[in-house]
Image (cartoon, rainbow, N blue to C red; front, side, top):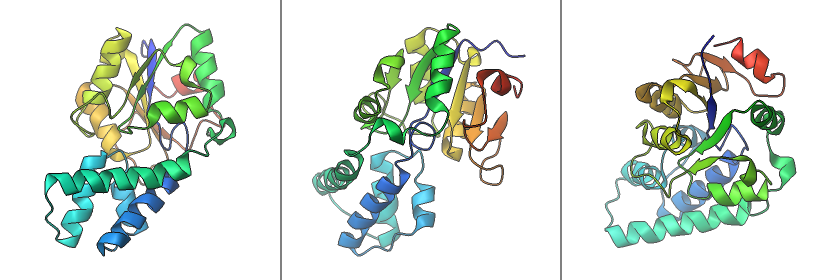
Length: 217
């Protein structure tokens, strides 16, 4: 069994599902730009930074814009997202995740967030989970988005624990690739068809305890 001393959680799709909010917000912006945006496009943006997500849409539409316009567009998308995500409440936490985090804390493990989102602190606050985290690294603290491992490496440094002793939970392939690149063991949250190269893949935390997760490592 691996010597796990901390867990690093992604946000969207792991702690809470705000993916639909991102989809609506990006699609609304894409519509304004005259660029088609499908659920497949939204899936491709999982775990991707706001800057790179906008570039994806602009490239798809063959659009070349100046930096100032790009900033305005990202701000507009974020306003669309916040309009939806601002209604998040503690009941929106995904099944089993609060119980798992509480179990980790009771057993003396440290807990960190490793997310590309720039709204992570707001979401965790609305979920009443912010005080359970020993470290929070999000899109406001990093320069490189997943699959670069910067977000997880920064989280491990903030906790003072080496990567090999930090278990990452991720729902996006880019996040799994980032964890592997940084030397972190990683468990995928989702389907085995969509996620590869994780130590294990589980559908969610609802039917799992910390002991049963450790048995997968």
